[in-house]
Structure formats: C-alpha cells, structure tokens
Image 1: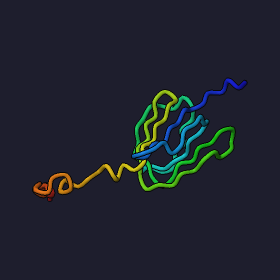
Image 2: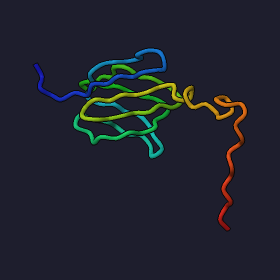
Image 3: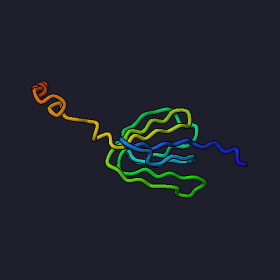
Length: 108
C-alpha cells in the first residue's frame, strides 16, 4: 500500500456530481494561466476556465471541458463548482422592476 498523499476531489454541477475521486495532480486554467494543484497545496479559491485534468501516478484519469467554474482547495480536499453562469442572473431576471445600475464617473 502506498503512503503517498492524494487529493480528494469532487466536481459538482448544479444538479449532479460530475466526477469524484482521489488524484495526485489537478491541472486547470485561471486568469494568470495554466496551474497545477498537488497534495499539500496552499488553500485558495479561484475562478477557473477551459478545462480540468485529473491525474494519478502520471496517468490521465479524466478531463472535463467547460466555460467557467469555481475551484476551492483546502487541506487536500478540492471542490469544483461547474455551471456558475446559470447562478449569476441579471438583476432584471430577479426583479423586472429593478433600475439599471448607476455608472461611476470616469477619472480624467
């Protein structure tokens, strides 16, 4: 039995679990570029895009393509929330009588 640390990962859409498993590397993209999450990674939350790749012992276990998601990493547990664009509704969809947002004056 291996004593190598693994990351527990769960990928959730708005209505189901898309992927769940133990991995030793996650690769994705954010506004800075490509990044990897390994066991014992620092805790963080990031908006991610394009795709996710899950690896164990150098083998690709699964790859998911998507537009945008939120990744939460904490103590070797990673949650990825897909479908967040569905949850981000325009104010008018929530309240049809809502006024348009007030724009701030630009600095000259």
